[in-house]
Image 1: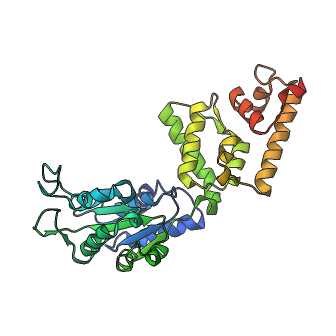
Image 2: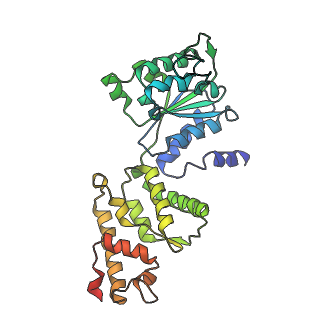
Image 3: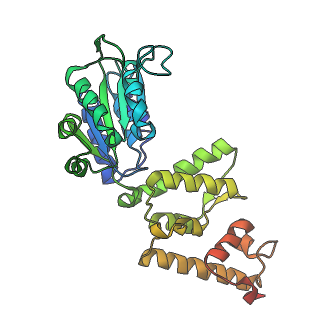
Length: 324
């Protein structure tokens, strides 16, 4: 029973029961107790850092630091200093000794997010750390030995980067010991209802809101959408919706799902959902004679905030004046 409780607490941030998620959890359970280097691949916004944190929390290093480094967010001139530290006077502006991320992670885990963005000279230094578990601070001569587990992640095709000469093949084989691929949200749509409920509840508590239920049409639209931005996009839309939602029924503006033409989702299922929603709204406007708000308005009949209904009327190109 204690083992089941521990497993639940470790995986509480990885939500879903789809085959893809079950495979990820199975791999985490197997690799976490080891010290093997892990490479997590997947599109932006799929939750690669959550997988890395779950690996750390299930490992024997869980009581030690988990240090996360976004390699794409650091200027190429500062990456080596951030990772390995520097001595005082090593370069202009180095007024004091700085401890690098690898030293900070000693005994624990370092997560190198977007490892494919590292410049070639830093890749050489990282390869040495993986091989020898030793490095020198910039401007220093002392060999520093560390005990760190490396978990890397990327949304790039590293094989293509090797062919293009922007990523070292020897480094690839060093970090590609145990690969874990995180599927995009469009390939695990059965997890969307659980994710939506989780984020709605989480943001509602954070904002001091009380949400009684989720609009069924909204859930249908969320499941039909292709989610080019994956879970991060879903999370952002839910947060935005709760900020704008007036009542206790959670709903979204359909226009938000098609705002970017390059990400526009088409297909029979989504088109049928839009048609069905349009029919329901037209029916309510007919009964209310074009009136949206008020005790006899269409918004009350549909259980939606008037502002939400107005935005949907606009998005679905309905002329409410036709019903007056």
